[in-house]
Image (cartoon, rainbow, N blue to C red; front, side):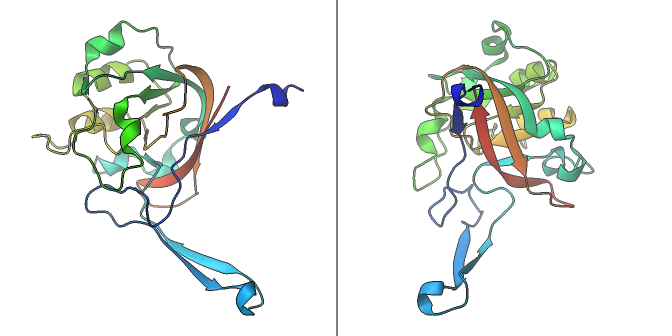
Length: 213
């Protein structure tokens, strides 16, 4: 009875050739190599997928030379208590937007912005909400397990600096989950799970991201 009283929400983008990708990245390639319906002895498929396509986690090494790789992050970085914070109606989230909120420490902090409406578009939009470096630094002071975002980048595509917010978070050795589909998620407390495959020597990987009430 206890399990049935909880709700599970899949906040992962589906992966297919139609999945939205960051400029310069290749979409997933999924190919059927054998098929029972074609007389083969079994059905089998292969897929080719970039580490930063769809819903995925960025380890600090994605933005820092000699930064922490995915395999070196603690398991708590992929699982634990989470807080979904609504920040819609803004083009840039500033430090002041975060300071007035009651944000607990040692949580996954998932920010819900207007970016959710862009996730299912066919082409990448440059007009997405971003996070200031100062706001990122403030969140890092709360020692979050991770920071979650609902588009491909915390930083503007045309930023004069090189990924300023992402770099601040990476320097704090905190992973960032991106392309979380939070459109139908109410703000509040949840339990988060976003485990990647156990890949070695990589700076990020796709995840299956789940929220539980």
